[in-house]
Length: 191
Image (cartoon, rainbow, N blue to C red; front, side, top):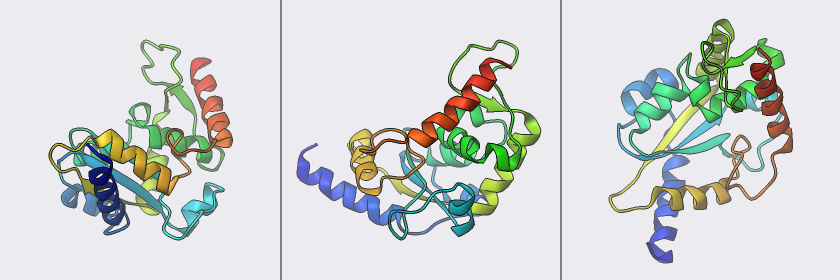
């Protein structure tokens, strides 16, 4: 993909991601089962409770890519209780909301803990996180056209939007988030 098409696809993705946003209840039926990018937006209270400030009006909290299905990845994983171990955005939210929501980190697989930095949450806390997400977050999507390298568009979008819950490809450090996630990862390893 040359630079002109990449710029064009990036512009298209930025427009779509800034567009229609769905709460979880609507997302189940509105978000397509196609590959593409997604953005999570928080209401004013979400930003406050996460102790974050948007760098500009309309900044998303998190942007990610779904290689197979936006509906499966976003609605099926990120918004679902019991999926924190498989969701970067859930782990980032959990790290910043741990004290407020009383979240307790556990290994992703309690039967066979692997010592990984990816943690899950005890069941009641995982449900509290899901409820918080349903109340505070909205989701927008961009469906990838054929023959577009999703990773390239994602990288360009992340550099433009710099969502504060993304750890990589944003061109800036996320030390507070990394430390907070590290605390929960360590707790799950010591569980």
